[in-house]
Image (cartoon, rainbow, N blue to C red; front, side):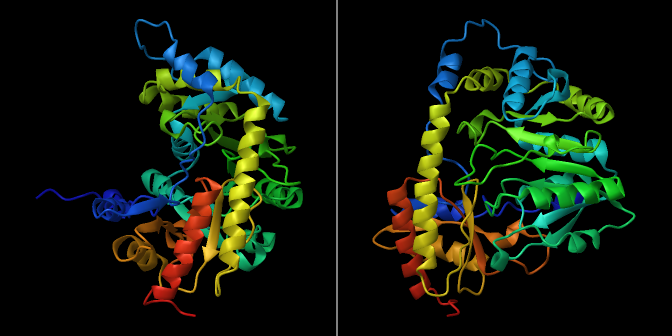
Length: 399
């Protein structure tokens, strides 16, 4: 039998999706599964985007230019200017989701064997993207006791080697919901300039910051024009996860040209989804005000409810719609699987993502789970009650 490639064997499972067969089996057994494992909001997509697709007058669904329709890129440039980022349409490449943007950046900026430093826990698919590009992830661990704040800059600097080419951050953060302070971003900026690194920034949750938290884009930091590559997406901003439209933004002309070569190789981003994405730029501000209020209610119900359970610790996220919870369990992978295969409360159970898959450090996150508060508040409260009952029954509970 022909062998599987080394890269194919090394490609990690998604902690977000790998338990899907257990959820299918639970539903087949007649149980209701509350899906808090994946960032798929139940929030309605803006009507203006839906109407644009329904009302399109095209007779051919054609290729777009490889960097996306010019009108959409012009609209995106206007959007970025509205959030304090001065860029031109020529500095934007429309991508097939934010995922493709990061894969393009890894492959355009890094050689196989190069290292990228990432504060962990981080979005689990970064591991997969790095494997695809042959890049080594070097984690620097943030602590739940500190609310997952950026680790001391000295800890990050200690990770820099002669193979280090980039730092990657997500702000607001997935899976922690942490929002970096201006002081933390300045520390990263100084480190990037000192070692002449790229700074990859995933800013897809920009619209979802709560209270007095304000996100600062790395593209607004001085002196980084040649260093920053930003990834963005419509998936969360407009609750359009299935559209698979993102963007790569950089002021570095050489990086842009290299990424364009990858973009041409995959031909073009999806035409119909670009129509929806361009129309979504007309979404009224009231939409985001309502969505943010809903997420705050959900967050508070989740965090307050879980922290009331003996042995559970959950920092209060400042943004996005995720929280990482430390539970009194022996294994997050085993517990999340057991919740689907062996446990229910009056016919209901909860699907979560084991946080071990959001770390690159072996053994980290074994007692943590990521929970996406993407269901209505009543469902979140019900999920908390189910988790509390599950901890009482779980054979591997450590309290």
